[in-house]
Length: 59
Image (cartoon, rainbow, N blue to C red; front, side, top):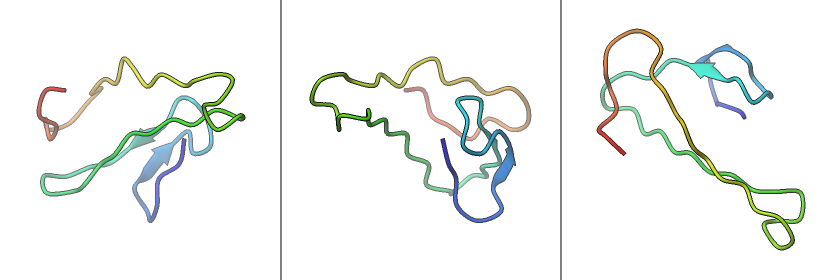
């Protein structure tokens, strides 16, 4: 996973990405497999807030 700018705290390019978001930021989660979701799919799930202020609405 990747983030742009200086929002990455740790895990850039891995499955364990920690990033900083503040109220008003736009955050999107998207997954694409090596086959562009043709032969196999990617499911984005179990996204958790570990610390800090709650900035996400329930999803």
